[in-house]
Image (cartoon, rainbow, N blue to C red):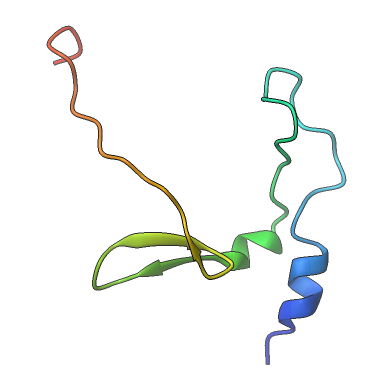
Length: 64
């Protein structure tokens, strides 16, 4: 049985993130990856049960 409280407690790494990351952004631990989920019917992505905002990007004419 999964101990969700334990996973939530250790969802971030103890290491500092790279300096180029925006302030306040933390790296997810390997245990924390368990909090990511997907709805197979809609392909929507979730973090600890909350839907993440995603967007589809089409390549620009210079990228194609």
